[in-house]
Image (cartoon, rainbow, N blue to C red):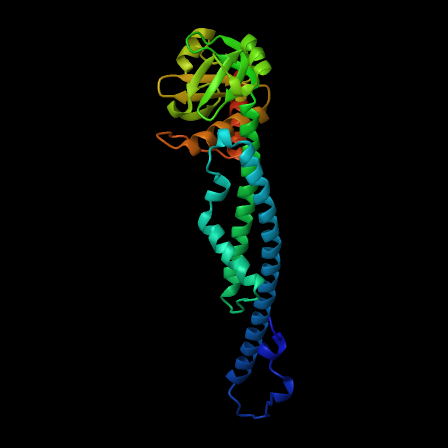
Length: 301
């Protein structure tokens, strides 16, 4: 970065202040402003240097995470699709960062006052890319978990009866197998899923947390207008398709997050007419907490 003292410091020996009783009082203020400018510029250089150090650390972290994400995508590619979303999202930011990484490696550092804001913005981009890659790695794992199947409860469409079985996510469908068929599927392996109920991803519009997708039918089945068929409705999710809903409940909150994120990631990757919104983990947890609080209020009446 060069010698900051020679660039921005004024040698004290060269500053001569003559005693003059008629001196303009603004002269001393001008000297003070010059000193303030010098200190600000030095602070800028320190800020630039600190930002570059952090950007360099993030560069290595991003490279490491990208390798992990590439591997996880390959393992889940049959469900996640050929295009890896961890490389396509944030593309313009990543292009900018690649340019900055190259400048830093070549020693081409911008030391202008405007560089402070620029490098701080680049550092924010780094943090966003790191968070995006970390989330993609977790979601690829969730897709693989759902592809392998999970035992849960399905509520039948017409009577809302609870049935046990295993739900699978493939690259094209949600597949439901009742307990006996699921045991056979496990023996054959998930790649040879046959029979059961299939709901094409292409027919799905969105995922709802809770058992509110068909309240009138639930009320008729349970003879209650205030209680859901599940004792823990915050552990339920419904997939809204073009001609019906598919309603499920799981054992814990992490499983809700796993299925909601996995299905919505698959829908977003598929594109088409889906009106689905990819909810963050925080938003999913907030929705579950809201349903739990409402259920507890109803139960206390």
